[in-house]
Length: 134
Ligand code: AMP
Ligand code: ZN
View (cartoon, rainbow, N blue to C red):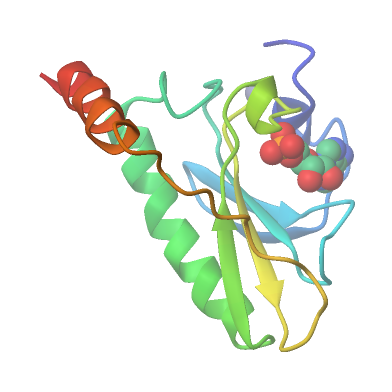
């Protein structure tokens, strides 16, 4: 946790461009924006990902996420909210964070590719996920 780059941003050991801050949550500009205004929203308490963050902390973060999303939406045509978990999903910083990405008509970014389910796959996949929710 000590060498967590986002914890260092929270403690101001590392500079950032702060968009919004309250007791529990920080929002700051992503240093490598997908589009200008790309903002990260993070809880001040260190948790790695969506799996380990306590519900109350997540709820606080969601409130700020919605505020920031509305604000960024004012300067764009739409927004994506993104959140990566584990390296396979593109998570690089192991402090849970939500990306608020401004989008513009014809900004050239591609949306996600869509696969098709094979015959048995839809029921099989549904069964596996539902079982884990029991
Ligand atoms: P992820 O791939 O979801 O872990 O995203 C990590 C994000 O953190 C990337 O979009 C980086 O550009 C961003 N990032 C890394 N270091 C900094 C920093 N010092 N200040 C602002 N954003 C950062
Ligand atoms: Zn951290």
